[in-house]
Amino acid sequence: MRKVFVAGIACFTMMAGTASAQAIIIGGGMAKDCFLSVQAQSTRFSEVEDMCSMALESEVMTRANRAATYVNRGIIRMRAGNYDDALSDYDRALSLREDLGAAYLNRGAALILAGDHAAAKAALDRAIELGTNDLHAAHYNRAIAKEHTGDVPGAYYDFREAAELKPDWDLPQLQLERFTVSNG
Image (cartoon, rainbow, N blue to C red; front, top):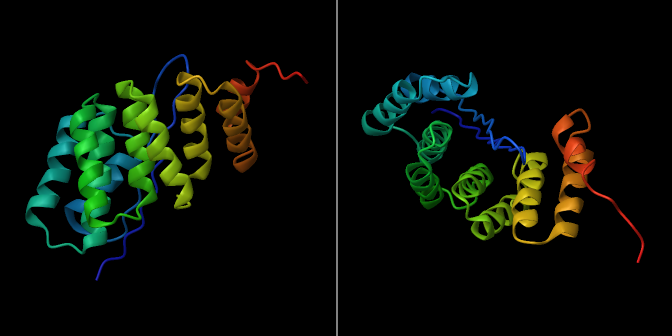
């Protein structure tokens, strides 16, 4: 039996809107190759998507492996700008494992990129509630969603939480520099 661990990081800067994501699968076959390509941040989107699809179509997997592979394929589709198909993959992963924080985290990221900040916030709330392995990324992305929906104080606190959770990560600190905090 293969063990599967999934962790999704999808983070954005307010200016560039770029994503960085990775997922982890421990096992073998094409599903593992799919993961390794996503982890390496391959830019061969079509090739990696095909590999992930082949794994889903032809490999016998546990529910956990199948869910993780859907997350990985979703990540590569999101990187390629195919947000609808990425969202579909995250939904499929969640239909297999409704407690998969990485799927909610990446779903939130795809929704931010698609411009649906309210839905992104809801997905990121759930990722945080589930204790996704990448809480720093969930708080960072939720800060972006909150800021776009008008919750500037909430955005500030989430950027601050992201910075506290991962002190060596520069992005939250850069975002916090844009804020002026005053009493009253």
